[in-house]
Length: 149
Image (cartoon, rainbow, N blue to C red):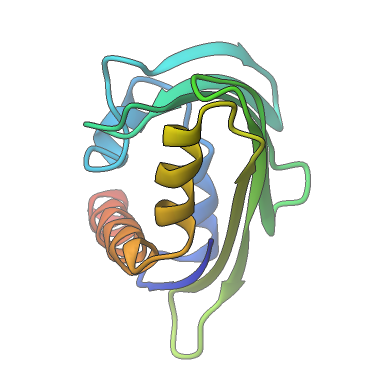
């Protein structure tokens, strides 16, 4: 899955929103992160390991995040409910006129069950990326507004 996000949040705000692994993460990403499954398993200065899922999704992942390069947040799935693995990244750049432009890439592979293969295919090859892009844009714009208040 690939999509772009244009947000009024500055690159610094985007980085903070993507790498906040406190209880505030559930508030920032309230439409895309299920508080019932969110669990931080490890945290360092430029990395985190967390269990996460989307509300209503049958899938959860344990992902290792890395933001040692402040312009890219990367993640690698270490464990998942569907038995596969995946990875992704968000490249953060200043947008013309202010705010940020994000390039998001995300892939999952090797699901064990046919049902899970079909669901992941639909997720990665359908208009779902436009929906996720809008959800991220809204979350980051809200974050920028609350961060500057």
